[in-house]
Amino acid sequence: MKNKKLYTLLEQKDNQELHLFNSWKDENGTCKVESTSLCGCMHFPEKSDTPLFICEDEENTRLLCAAKGRAVCEKCIGQLYKSEKVSHYDESLLEV
Image (cartoon, rainbow, N blue to C red; front, side, top):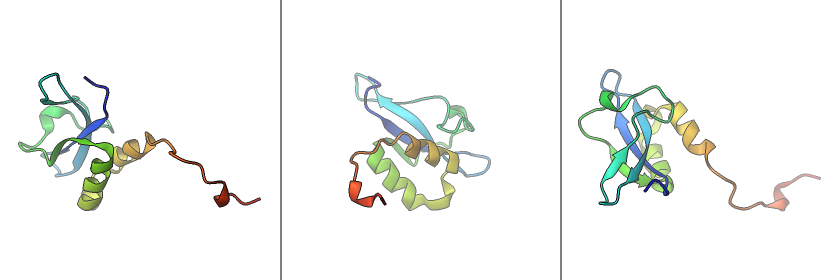
C-alpha cells in the first residue's frame, strides 16, 4: 500500500547525519522503508539501531525535522519540500 506518502528518519552511523526515507505501511500496518534515502546518500543497512521516527506523514515529518535542525541532511529536506504542491494561489501577492 504505497499510496500515502510517509517518511522515516534514520541516523547514519558514521557521521550522525539524519536522512529521510520514503516509507509506507503494508497490509498488516507494519512500516516499511525504502532502501535508499531521499538524497540517495544513505542506504538502509547503514542506519542506526533505532529510527528517530517512522512512517510519519508529510506535515509531521516537516515539523519533526524542523525540531532536529541542521542535523537533518539538507538534500533530504530539499527533496521533501520539492514534492510540495501549491495548495492555493493568492493573486494579492502579485505585483502588477
